[in-house]
Image 1 (spheres, helix red, strand yellow):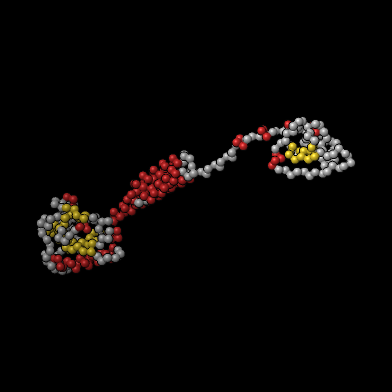
Image 2: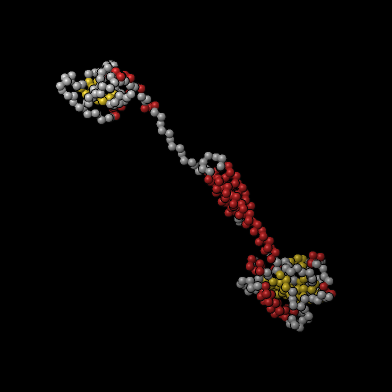
Length: 345
């Protein structure tokens, strides 16, 4: 049972305020024993910080009925039932200021992993490099290093998102770089196949039963040197080769004092502009070669027993390498020695 707050005799002849849990420092004079005079009502003191300190009387509190401004109830316990002042903890019993445990410091926010950031940056650089065909190998190497660094960063302290992002960028970048590499290889192969100039036969090719058809391949012709079509010059002599491919890149060239059938008589270029189409290029090449035939041979094409054909660039050469060169070649149906320039037949 807890003793209610009130003024009680503390054994020193005066009343002391009991706040319900401990004695306070507030005291007042004990009321007179004359019953005719009413006990003055003493207001309860306001609680202050000093009240927290327990009071220790110099001697034990004798048994008595607690006094209060109101008429005490006969059921209140005797003073001896209240805890003695000496039973309250003294000031020396409170822990010293130095004994209080400090508040725990706030946990530091998670730091970003430096290694993870390095892996992420390396992954981005690797993707860019791997998508550039000439330096794609370097890009793949950087991507491999970025993958390892990002993976290791996941096992270190710090935020994990840079490492996870780096792994994702590395994997997606590898797929993208592989796709670009495959596309580049395919385009390169197609362009390589189209890089050969097309040989267009003249309107009057040799007859199938012509004895001159019995010729050898260019690789076994004695004294022949394979020359790129674009490097042919006026006066170059060529042996007759029947089995030409549809597209030609190199042709055999022999010394003109050696028996041959063909000779280059004009090398020029078509006008600049966009590729007009195979038909238009062939028509313009035929017109140019026909007009130059008479100047080189000495008589017009309609009067001559000789024929001519030409080479012209494909669309790939025209657009990719800006090659607009054409080569006009006169052809004899019999072996000749020396030049055909001014032959007039």
